[in-house]
Image 1 (tube, rainbow, N blue to C red):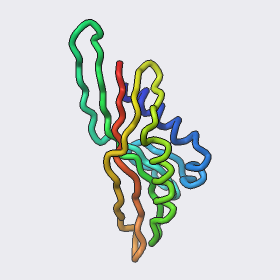
Image 2 (cartoon, rainbow, N blue to C red; image 1 turned 30 degrees about the horizontal axis):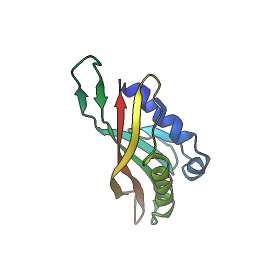
Image 3 (cartoon, one colour; image 1 turned 90 degrees about the horizontal axis):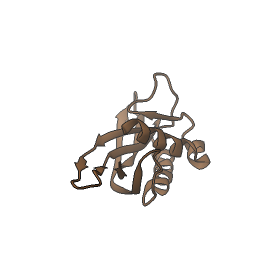
Image 4 (cartoon, rainbow, N blue to C red; image 1 turned 180 degrees about the vertical axis):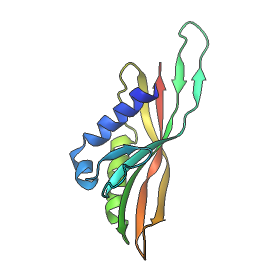
Length: 138
């Protein structure tokens, strides 16, 4: 289930021209490739409870929470990362992600994320995005 879900998420995030123009370094699962130039996007599974239902349907509900964020730097400004995070919000919050072979419901933005990572001298890598809860059924 996780592979199909991450394929669908990658397709959505890389398929948006506005977001691609903001995050020219591309998208990565968990960690960016070594040597990639910012700005780029990262998504990673934060938590993912699974609920088994009883009865004839045998339905499984998976509620993964993903960190989806923009990373920019080294810089002293969060402007571009913030613009990308706003676009991510527009693409995900309240929208239904189509996952091949699975049912799904609208994603929910559950928490904003913003932090700095030291990048030498007074410069920082800026991480801006959010936690999004998805609903996937099988």
